[in-house]
Length: 175
Image 1 (tube, rainbow, N blue to C red):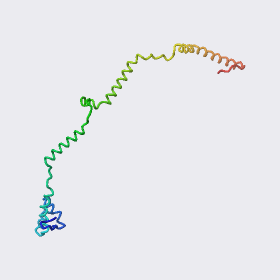
Image 2 (spheres, helix red, strand yellow):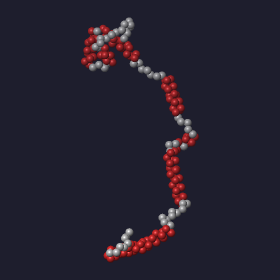
Image 3 (cartoon, rainbow, N blue to C red):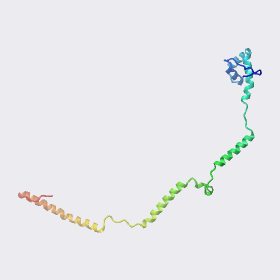
Image 4 (cartoon, rainbow, N blue to C red):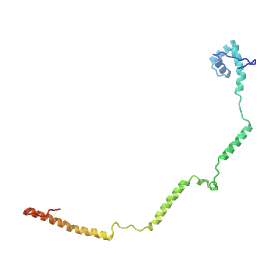
């Protein structure tokens, strides 16, 4: 630090931080008494404390912007916000509540169109055919009646096999 004769004032090394706290009034009571006793004996520390009184108030001078600054700042903020505002179609300005819903609205419309199409087209489709045509159904019924005949033939073959075994002559083998 410089005093008025441009000669730097130097405080004692062990007291320099304490002098700054003493100047601001933030030192504890014990340290305050110790610094006051030292200041009575040391002219270098007294000069350093006087320099702190001159220099420190200049370093903490409030830096308050002028009213012109705040007016220009406000104008600049408004201009930047206006530039960010989207320029949309006239429909967006007229119907702003529709803007966030285009995808869900299209999905609902597609589902409704599908349901309507399927329900109206139900009468246009040909009726479902029965699983078996009439002639095939009759064939199946006839086969059932013929099954009794084939079962009786198997029974007869079994009888022929038994008779051949009892008589000891070779006969037909059952299938």
